[in-house]
Image 1 (spheres, rainbow, N blue to C red):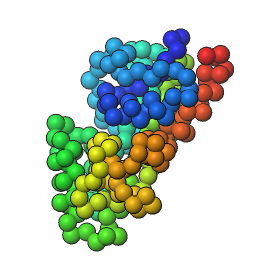
Image 2: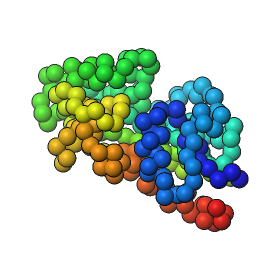
Image 3: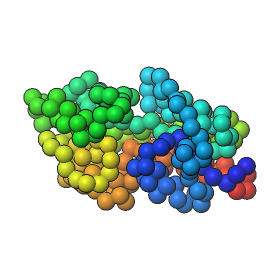
Length: 203
């Protein structure tokens, strides 16, 4: 087995976070493109976990080895949990996050402060070389900001305000964000399982 992990994404922002969090496993983490995988995966699951498993298994069938995938998004309580599993495709796949973020702020124009609650959710699926699957999930609670703030992060980070830190996730250092983020939490949960597998195989 080649000594690497393939992460089923082409999102450069996600890859930066993932590589930082998984760095102590001691294996290179490749994106789908870097692994030579070109797939159009239909994400038709009803939950983040189902979509993560669909992506991981689709790539694993082409590559074998260790494959990870995540499905993550923003759930805003005031608008019924939207955009949820449709976070990446909200208002259309080619719509910029600047437009998406402003649309969510606009939809909460009449919301009271205590009604602006939201959370980031991330499900991480792993498929190991023997075909076994594992899914972990992480969340981080926050509020929808009244206006975008911060130049870091990506996606919905500029409008996701975390009261304990007094700023949006786009205003945090990458180290702080990785420590508290939904994806960071889910990756930290799955990391020991991958580490134990590598140890049993002497990798």
